[in-house]
Length: 114
Image (cartoon, rainbow, N blue to C red; front, side, top):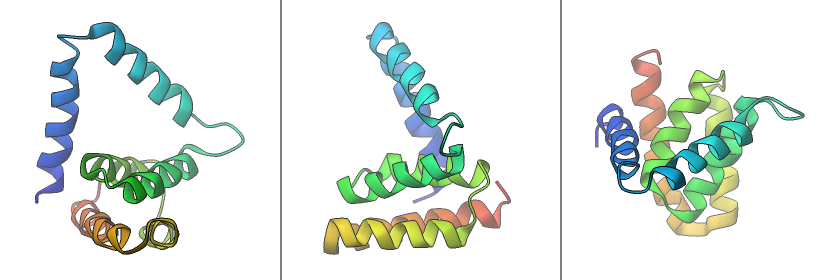
């Protein structure tokens, strides 16, 4: 899987869905931005939390997006790897499989200097 293409596919797909349910998608993106803005937790920390949840619930698109966005917000690969470890604690064997996808995304995005 190419995580750059996957990121674009997810974002474009949600945008296309907005053509059919604009209020819902606009509301989702408003919530997304509000939930992830800096506060008591930094955006980077919040992206790591979102990544752990994405791994535990097995959402491939969410994993790709939150790895990219965590790196863009300043998270280090080491912080992401530790986040993967916590997700595996909470999600077991299946989370290890999806955690590996997150590892691949880190390597791809870091290799391209997000």
